[in-house]
Length: 290
Image (cartoon, rainbow, N blue to C red):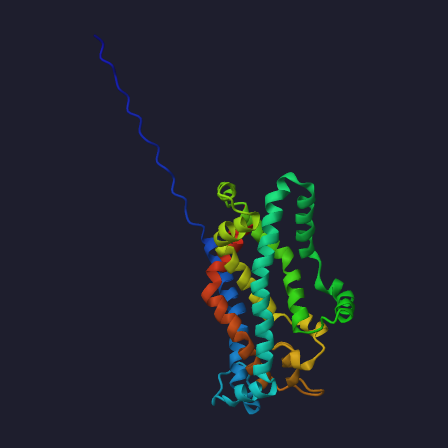
């Protein structure tokens, strides 16, 4: 018998990839620039809001004496409680009806667009509206709003719901695709109507996207300046953003009171984004990537 020779095959050593120090350096530089770009304006706002006019020689320096009265004066000059309630009413009503109506529209379009040219065209028609700047339709909109007597907080709230439909349809449609249609078929077999299928089966599943749409709608409505400027004709129905005009005179601007007022307006949005930013990222990712 001939002895069989066994050959041992040595595994090849995997080459370790050397870390690319150039990428690390570029990432670190971009991170530092991003920190300054975000925290820089915020620091400047806080510093100016806490100063009095005599300390404005060095704008970047921390105030030697904090002037808390700026917030009290800004509160009174802007009629903050009234303007706050106007802004809060528009924002809350917009969020509630946007979630209900926009999710329903997106659900119907998404479920029927695969076998209906009408719904498929309607989807692209709504999504294409995201690329139309508000400035293009501003003047015709002002005329129509005045004609239908919608130049008030109720009218502008309806417009916010309508103008948010294109973006929200895009987000909701991507999320609806991930929901198994078998759940809806099972509900129909149990005798549920189409409305019951949506509100009792689909609507609760869409909670992550509801949170995302609510946060994005809140930040857009709360921070919006242009639409209230051209549509709200009654000074008593102005929003907080329009109230900032009170600090600007013909020849001068009281920056200390103005920045104190900016902080009062910014605080709700900043707090909401800090506590709910994970819903924004998760919702946009799940809705857009499909």
